Image (cartoon, rainbow, N blue to C red; front, side):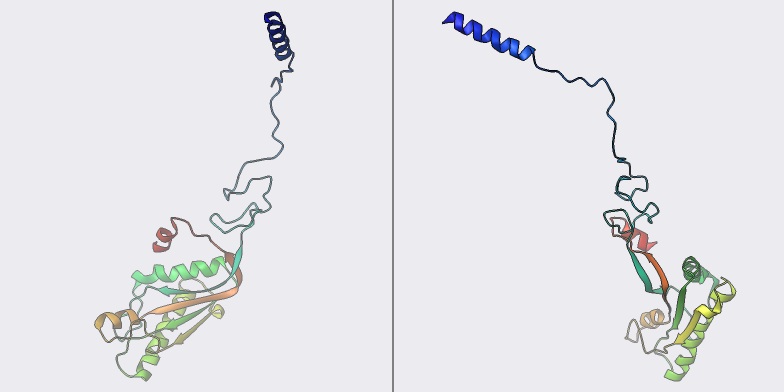
Length: 201
């Protein structure tokens, strides 16, 4: 019996020693490029769009999704009571609109003027129109936006943010809004953990 066990053991050991051993003498060649050059989460081997805006929503091939331009931006210009004078401290607010319109040359802007509910509707109609005109003129004369791309409309006190009659309500209701529309398109940006901080800026 012992002899049989010894023979079986030798057979097993010799079988193990006869197995083929694969060696890695040559370096492995990577068939596909797995880099993500434009940092959009899509590897080069699959990438079809290499110049997608960073942070844009993309499809499986790295191509950014786009949306038509149609947005409203409130200019944080606080007018004094019964005035349409724009303090130079608010010029950067207007410049934001000008920069956007230069980046997207087919956009149009409608500048809306609004008033607080003090005085007559007719008086505030003229005042709100003058506020819208003042911003439009600033865009054209100081920031070089073609006046053909701008229009201005006054809404008197018909569209208040705060309908109460407090001093704070009157202050926030004296405002200007730019409505931007156009044939241009802009990247559809995806939400991420820093989005709120970016919007605050």
